[in-house]
Image (cartoon, rainbow, N blue to C red; front, side, top):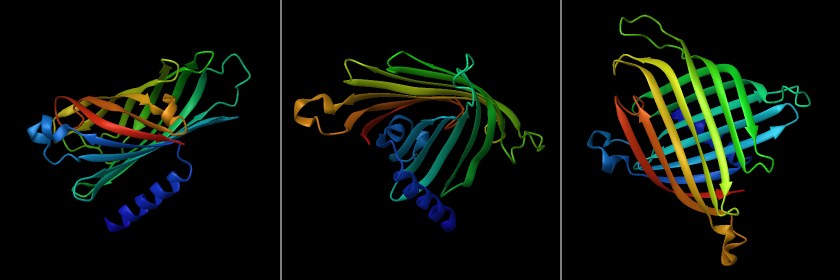
Length: 240
C-alpha cells in the first residue's frame, strides 16, 4: 500500500506541472448522512484538458483526506480525431483508464473504456458539450454467483458553460454504467457531479487573480452506497 501511495503522489506531482486548474473541496457528506461517517472531509482535484491536432487529452486526479491522505483516484481519457477538417469532425474515438486506491480497500475501480464520442461547442466556445458511449472492462468483477462479470458499458455526458460576461462558470458530467456490486446487490450505477463557480478575477481589486469560489454537488445512485445520495461541497479553484 505504501508503494501505491508513493506512486500516486508522484503522479500528482507530475500532473501539477501540466495542470489546468487545482481545486479544494470541503465535503458535507458526513454531516448529511450518518452512514457516511468514514467519508473524507477534504478532497483536492487536479484537472487538465488540452486539445491538439489529433483530438484532445483530459485527466483529473482526486486526493482524499481525513486525518491524513486516505485515498486517491484518477481518470485519463484521450479523444482521437484524425479527421478534424472533414464534416465528421464532431465524432471521435474515445479511450480511457480509471483507477484508484484507499487505506481501507486497497486498489479499486480499475477499468478500461473504449467507444465513440459526439462533441460540440458554441461559436465563441462559451458552451461545450460531449456524449460518449463506451464498452467498459472492469477486471476482477464478479456477480452474485461468484462468476467473473467484467464486460460492461458506460454512457457519459460532459458540459461546460461560461455566462454573466465571464463572472460565472457552470460545468459537470453525468455517468451511467453497469458494474455488478455483489456486496450491495446492485448492478447499475448513476453518478453526476455538478459545479458552479464565481470567478473573482472579474472584480477590479482581484483582476490579476485566477481564484474562483463555488460548490460541487455529487448526485448518485448505488455509488457511495446502495441508494440515492446528494452531497454538496464548499470549494475553491485556482486556474492556471
